[in-house]
Image (cartoon, rainbow, N blue to C red; front, top):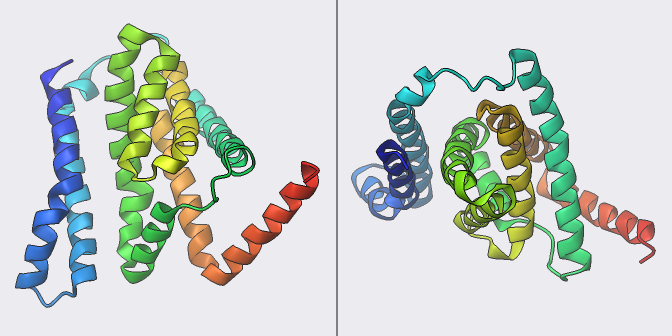
Length: 237
């Protein structure tokens, strides 16, 4: 693996854990509250990491695209198709977790992100744009892409998706993260363009954020309960 890819991974890891040191320092030297200091540091660290990663990947941006790489029109079509595929995979994985594995539906990670966004609305930039770009570069382009050269699609996608799920701190929902990871890995292989899973990921995150911001938590919980009842009826529960 190229050295610059290792530097990208190291940058991502530093970003993930930098808040443990610098968020408390920001809290001490500014009038920000503890929660706000953590949020603002997260915003800064994500954006700074993206700048560093894009700088490191300049050689990749100058490389001639693969001869079978998707055209501009195909990028749009596959991004849209990938969005629906990701939602279907998410739904199927949620059903398996809920009714086969007995795992309670709902994501603490998503709830935490929404609480942060309601506190500092600008955080939506991280959720909808910065994080998807970084995650697809790290987990699909680098981790999956390098493994794919040696291990083939399934095993490479499984490993990258597993790491993707662990990083999000919800091992109980690894099946959901893995299912979406498989879809994004497929999009990358099919189109030879990392921009395709990036777009699908960005749109998926944006839709989730918009829906949850427009609806208050009580309405969301009521809708989820109604959906659960419908699912029980549909599967003969």
